[in-house]
Amino acid sequence: MNYQLTPIAHIETDFPTKFGVPRQSGLVKGLKGRIVFEPDYREPEALRGLEGFSHIWLLWDFSEARKTFSFRPTVRPPRLGGNRRVGVFATRSPFRPNNIGLSSVRILSIDLHTSDGPVIEVEGADLMDGTPIFDIKPYLPFTDCHPDAWGSLTPDLSPADEARTVRFSDELLSAYDAEHIDALRQVLLSDPRPHYHDDEERVYGFEFAGREVKFRMAKDVVEAWIEHT
Image (cartoon, rainbow, N blue to C red; front, top):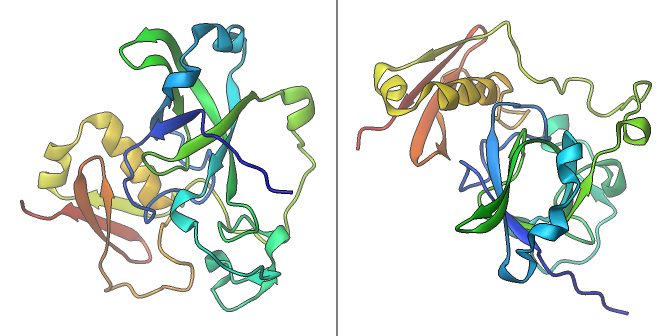
C-alpha cells in the first residue's frame, strides 16, 4: 500500500543550501524561521490554542535528500568520522526509507493575519529555506522531555564550543544586524564542518541570509569573512 503526504506549510530560513545548517534543532537558538502555510491550510482556526505552548514539533520533508535508492540498512554518519557504519534507525541520517525529518523549535510569535495568512515565527530550526512541512504538533514537556535520556553515538554534540573565539571581518560585521551576527557566531562555534575534516588552513563557505560566508577554523579561533561583491 502506498501512502501520500501533502505539505501543509513551508519554512523560510537564512540557509538556502544544506551546508551550515545546524545538525539538530535547538543547537543554535538564535536562528529564526517563518512557518508559512500553504493556501489550502491558511485557516486561523487551525492554530487556535497553539499560543498556549512554548514549543512545537515539526514533521518535515528531507526534500534535498530525495532520490531513488534501494534500502540500505546502514549509513556512515559524518559526525562519526564518515568511516563507521551504523544502523540507519540508530541515526538521523536523511537517507532513510521515508524522507521524514523531526525537529523541536520554540515559538516566538503567532500572527494569524498576515499577507501570507497565519505565520508562526520560531527559533532553533535546523531546516533549509523552503523545506516542506507535513505536520505541526505541540511539544508536551510532561511526556516529551526525558531528563534521564542518553545517546551513545553522539557524545560530542553540544550547542557551541565556547573555548573558541570568532573573529569577524569588518565587512561581515557591517553586512548583518546584531541578531544575525549572534546567530552566525553560534553556527560557527557549533562547527558545521564534516567531523572528519580537521585542516586548519582549509577555507569553507556557506550561504547565510543572502551572502556567502567564508570561514577558517583553527583550534582556538574561527576567522569569518564575506566575499567582495
